[in-house]
Length: 296
Image (cartoon, rainbow, N blue to C red):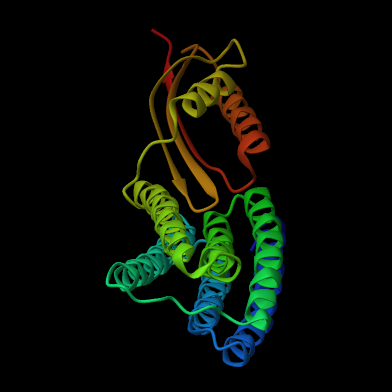
């Protein structure tokens, strides 16, 4: 394993382990607060926080696998395992959204049928407030670290943290402060939260599936690659460019033309220089294949 991959893996481990510890403590606190504060919503919120522990484990497990170097059975390395982790976490996020949606619809039906939603105790409200603040901080920290190491699974896990904060906000704030006739506002807010979570989950799943289905890199990235490839005037007419993302790395295949009278040693030196520039821009893990043709 390269030093760059090892450093990246350790950073993912660190941010995810911190999230694991925070989720564990918050889950226990919210469970106790839900029981003491007579809040079924808070108990459900605690279960949601426990589910975050599972996604933390997924990130750690798949980060370890995806960091492995190429072997006889994986010529392009193990980067797609991280993509798979992203999809798994995104689906879990969608399930969370479905749970919030179902709960909000249930509460709205209770009010429509003439029933009253229970008012949670103060201890439950305090626990929700602490959870919202802590989870938002954890989200910001996790998403920043995930983007720094270009890890879609860590970014997806960060959104899982934020969904927990949003569910706490939508579950208790209106129910505590507003009168009985206005507590339905909580359920309506939860509907909005559920839609927002579904949108995030859909975007993350779509990104992961695009990578698994070998979608090319964005057009502006491909244009930048071509500019880097032809930075030396001895290299021209790039064509047959093929690109894709493999976990945190990208793969680039391109044909170029050079002077047909050029020595093999010179053309090799030029391709090595192209590889150096591409890796300097896109990372040491960039997989590059350059096919040289004589200039016509």
